[in-house]
Length: 357
Image (cartoon, rainbow, N blue to C red; front, side, top):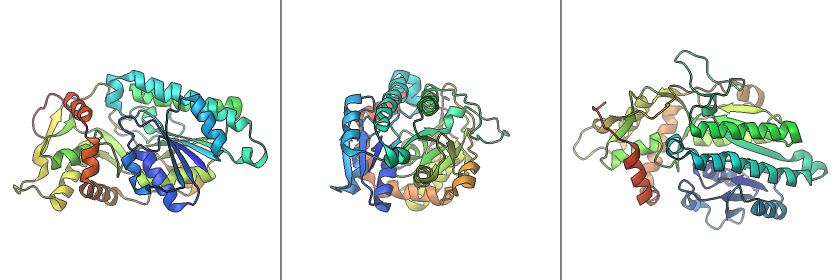
């Protein structure tokens, strides 16, 4: 049995689905079901008896104690987090509460549980904390990619809260001996991605005939990682990672945002052409850049390849095609997550349209 926190969110749900497809080991899935947590992400599991879903907060120590005592997981994979930079700028408090305070309570609950284990159970237990490359800050255009030894320099409330949680995980290992592993991943994309993030937002807005908002000059560079590759990396680190170590997980796909948008438009031109025969790129507009927008992230994932033999299976070209095809095949999922609150957020967030790109 493993316990997954945040397992109804984008990456967590993909992990749970892949885990249950590849393993007979059951999953207890704890998710608070905030705006980005969605039971519909897990609909394919139906009434699978190996999937036990519990709605709850990682900060609820009484609930955690009960779940740990009842199910006795051999490992915990922590995806639970507030994760959108824009939302952290407008409301940092939720990010501090979940990512910092919540992680603290989770670590304390897990420490109490692990401390009571004995023998082989105690030796085999693992706590894997899933984090982000954004904790490293911003890179110059010609700077080497982030390694695990890179200085932590977070620039947004989101990345600062994740850096804090990473430090807590490290401290609980060095102070208390808790057997932890940490992964820092680059930008994920793929099925079930909440459509406030770049790639799904472009797909959804393009199909709806809406503007495709690009921040500033669109030249912010990110390393793109297909979500199922990320899931395979986490499984590999859980299986064989060295205790107390951090592993960077990247896709080796550095691309500027504007190139991503044009790629999505070209795929939609091929797979779902506009009725008027024009290309979707005519919908691209530039909007005011967000405060403190990091210019470049890049992950050096050679440690993960060298020590554990992991490499991504997807190229960006194959992964982005699969992603666009998934959204085209799941219009009901898209419409269900686009609540009134989501529409109000998008309207407030992407302001001051400028010239077409």
